[in-house]
Image 1: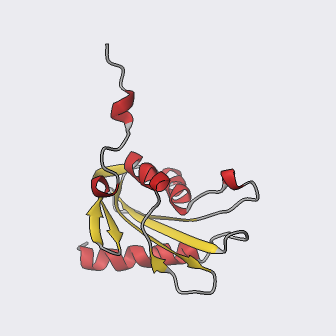
Image 2: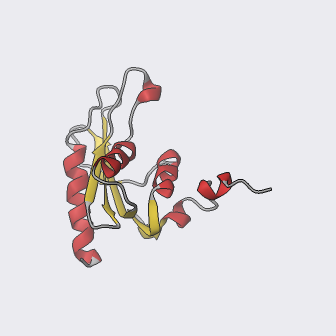
Length: 137
């Protein structure tokens, strides 16, 4: 599938997920969607909690779906967000979510942003990853 078909498909999946967001505290809905290296579309929405520290971001619930449906890596990603009652806008993942995407990326994860499509290394340069945990004598 070429990217002119891919981004609208992922955008629709992210917006559909956003409709299911549970946001009684912030009223800020987020929906995320990605294409896996194997061609599956996975998505997720944010799920707030009164104990704010256990709130799940959309990217986190999306990665949960990634593994619940067989695992793999992410090749393309898009995220939409906005206050309830307003039109959702294309948004860029926060730092924590960029780290989550980095961990589960494929060889060239592409992320759609308001400034165009970029690679994960542009959003999270010099990222911490599994290579930092290797044991070296």
